[in-house]
Amino acid sequence: MDAGEARAQSDGVISNAAANYGASFQAHLLEQYKVFVESAQRVTDRRITTGNYLLTVNSFLLTVFGVASAQHMGGFWLAIVPVAGLLVSFTWYALVVFYRNLGASKYKVIHQMEQYLPAAPFRCEWQTVHEDKAQRHTGVTHLERVIPLTFAVIYLALLGYSLSSLAGK
Image (cartoon, rainbow, N blue to C red; front, side, top):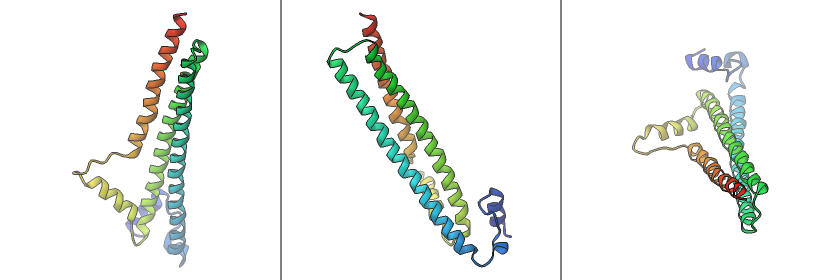
């Protein structure tokens, strides 16, 4: 067992050494690698779908607030919309963090599996992005987290407006 294989086994990615597994080790590893890469892509797709859905929900809530305000429907009911929006925004933020952690874990496993394959495209891409100091790299997740926080700030302002109009009555 070489050093890379020992490290991969200690990390848990390889449960059975190539020598013990037999001749089909590489073929089965490649097939599992393909499945795992596809699984990582599905997580990314789910993350995008979730973000789009929650953006739509927030847009709907802001529209409801705007229509209710224009119709002079103030009071308690107007304050419910920003409270719901805050809950949606905090849930969205938590989901962004969850998907970031899940994606990072999946790519860590992919990098470990690539130690046994002839090429390591994902590891190479990751290293290339992070080694180029001239190119400032900001992960999408960092930008994604700003969106629900921005909505939360808007909802806090709308809640303040709702409560002040309620107190003014």
